[in-house]
Amino acid sequence: MIDFNQNPFLYCLKDCSTVVTSSPHESVDVAVVGGGPAGAVLARGTAAAGLKTVIFERDRLPRYKTCGGGVQHRVAKLVGCDLTPVIRTSVDRMVFTYRLEHPIERVSPQPVVHMVMRDAFDAYLVEQAARAGAEVRDRTRVDRVDCRDDGVDLVTASGVVRAAVVVGADGANSRVARDLGLSGGVDLDLALEAEIVTPDRLRERWATTALLDLGSLPSGYGWLFPKGDGLSVGVGGPFKDRALLRPYFEQLRRYLNLEDATVERFTGHQLTLRRPGAPIVAGRGILLGDAAGLVDPFTGEGLLGAVVSAQLAIGPVVRAVAGEPGALDDYQRAVDRELMPELLEARIVLRVFDRMPRLAHRLMGTGDLFWRNLAKLMLGETTYRSLGGGTFRVGWRLLDRLLPPAAA
Ligand SMILES: Cc1cc2nc3c(=O)[nH]c(=O)nc-3n(C[C@H](O)[C@H](O)[C@H](O)COP(=O)(O)OP(=O)(O)OC[C@H]3O[C@@H](n4cnc5c(N)ncnc54)[C@H](O)[C@@H]3O)c2cc1C
Image (tube, rainbow, N blue to C red; front, side, top):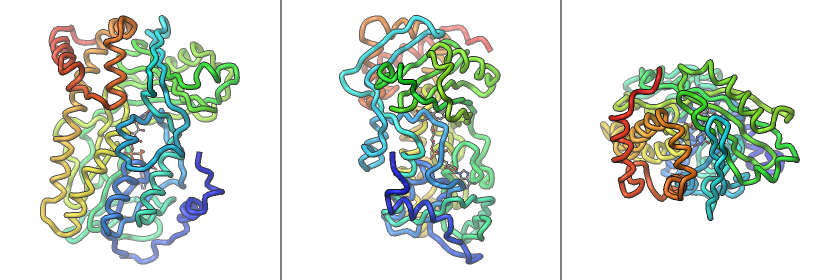
């Protein structure tokens, strides 16, 4: 955990809300709205390329973010910095339950996923961006974005800033998406999550073990992710099923024997799932991460989409600032080519699992085939499309055609 009072750099970052955007028309190359992982990774790249880059973050950093905090190995590799200082623990055991019964425990010889708390993780990535030369203005909400021919105006309480390019990395309810006319191209999930102090009696049980419960919702799942001193316990599914989430969360808490444990926070947050072809570029603006809807529909993980989209955007943004016409359109093409095929495959996997959660749970406990492949997926050694040498893909595509539709 980063201690903001010990680290002089972060102390300065913490106080940068006092920087006033005094000039009514201050000019920057790249205005990044949102200091989450997508914004931080993009800003580090464009600042390192020599562009005047400013991150506008509405909250004071470090800020809490509702999130399981599961960081895939692929994410850890792609962020391009050592995440050791912010990893709370790494999971090498998983328990799978079906409707909060029939626990099946599987062990991996190596950790399948790292666990972070997002306040420290995100602040750490923002720190990397600042080190590369990006300016960070926290407690600075962007209230409006006006796209013009010669630039983009960002309206904040402390003034108007003109940017050559605006990057919407402002999460699921993106202001930038709305102002660029790009909202509405996503389906919505909703998740509830509690941060719970690990009771001493359960400390060892959940030291490096995570739990996933399948089949309790028409679609979606419940989880427990270990965080050392804390446990992140949550439930999530399609927005239309939101009324089912709170009762399910309470059942999960009872099942985990956490009824008397201290709940430090209990929050909800949307997840955005981009529909095929939905535009994520308009004029001088682009969307990244959750603002673009790049969450995996099957697992609900969005950190990979945030980091990959940010990296795909760096080159096009640098070229756009240099005045190359159509450069930003290359970003959307890159997302459609590099990210969307996996996210669309994940939609098919989700549809099949929703119709046969019991079988999926049983297969997890039968032999090693399912578990080994899931672990490989989590380790980043394979993709949905190439799982089992592509045989899984054939299987679920067939099942998607043959199985009756899930009950509405
Ligand atoms: C309950 C839950 C559990 C999850 N668990 C996982 C998990 O285990 N693993 C995983 O990979 N993903 C998980 N996700 C998804 C993951 O949290 C997101 O995909 C990820 O945070 C996206 O990063 P981002 O940078 O795009 O947006 P965010 O992290 O949401 O960052 C957006 C930032 O923009 C700021 N902002 C918003 N509006 C403005 C404005 N107008 N002006 C200035 N700043 C603004 C916000 O304050 C925020 O800091 C989970 C999500 C939920 C809801």
